[in-house]
Amino acid sequence: MKEPSAQSTVAVRYGFNHKIKTECAYQNKAIPVFLGSTAALCVLSLLYLDVDWIKLAGRVPDMGSIFYRLAQFDFKYMDLIAAAMWETLSITVLSTLYSVILGLFFGMFAAENIFRMRWLSVLVQSWFTFLRAVPTPVWVLLMMVCLGMGPAAGIAGLCVHTTAFFTRAFAQSFESIPQETIEALEATGVGRIGVFFNAVLPAALSQLVAWIAMRFEINFSECAILGMIGAGGIGFIIARSIQGYEYGTAGVAIVLVFAFAYSIERLFIFIKNKIR
Image 1 (cartoon, one colour):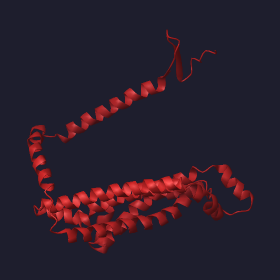
Image 2 (tube, one colour):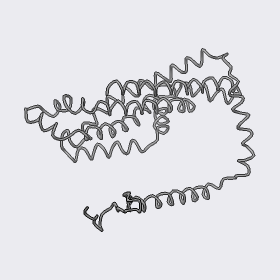
Image 3 (cartoon, one colour):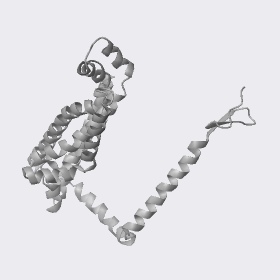
Image 4 (cartoon, rainbow, N blue to C red):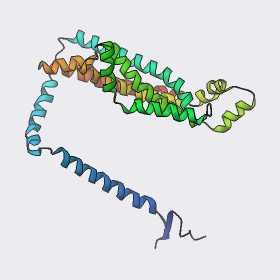
């Protein structure tokens, strides 16, 4: 057997029991550095925040009492909770649907293997990176200034950030398609748009469904949070109930959000498995 090179990344050792032991020197160095850096950042963050641990420990029993009161469900306002839940779902569906369409359109230009104009891909990716860097609540607040409080501001604000997310994610999915497939269609005289719809889009469909499913769950969760700042939906009911000390009503709404989010996750897993 040929001895491994001294410059090899993976070192091979022979034990007394004649079993081969492999050891990756690069990983052994990288893991301690990563763990040490993470620990140092955690310590620095705690020192900067100056957390009062004594006060925090004294509030722990209060957390238990709050969760106990949330568990005492009150179904008196179930009609309002159902209406708010439907509004949250409508905002999630519309914002995700509009963003998927826009993400597919801009994703074509962001992918380097569709039109093969690197300057265009860099320009589109840079612009949507800027949009994605701004958090969703900021976009929603800006839309509230323009459109007023309500579902319209929530849909518009979510669309901005979600479209930026889909543009980047879809572009990565398109770029994962083998170049030989694209060149084979181009050799038959098919144009760039035809290549996209006949080869790239069908080949990347399972990846697109995975990205859409993940973002739909995120949008649903964000809708529940954004309702607390005036975007409408179930978040408004939860915030108003807690502020009014109606913990039983808030508990029903929170459990409904958890149950629906879990159902969404299982549904998209089923759809993805069917596509595969």
